[in-house]
Amino acid sequence: MSGFSGPYNVLEDVVRRAYDRVILEFPEACTCEQCKTDTLSLALNELDARYVGSYSGETRVRVELESTQSQIDIWLALRKAIQQVNRRPHHDRV
Image 1 (cartoon, rainbow, N blue to C red):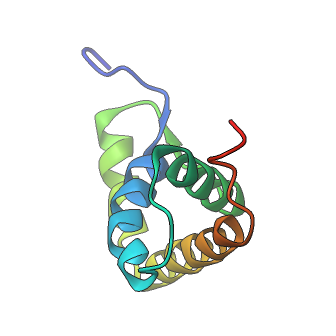
Image 2 (cartoon, helix red, strand yellow):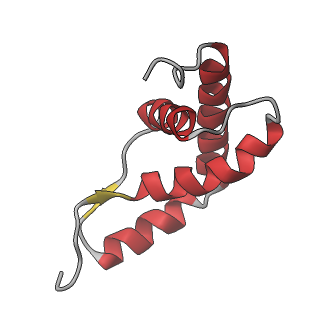
């Protein structure tokens, strides 16, 4: 594990990248940093964490997360989270 700074949740990276695509479906959604953080937090809490402790583990998990079912699960979790944050944004209460 030389040079690897694990453990970390690979799903966070994948969900952050997916957010940039899914948010385009919601032009009315606020994309301020607080709303984005709230959305990512809600979506990640809906999904099972995928922690890794090595480069080989990271590669394996990233391949698994490219499956159609994983992509659908991530998309659905993000859509649900975006809708929830849109209903009650907290950017003005922080």
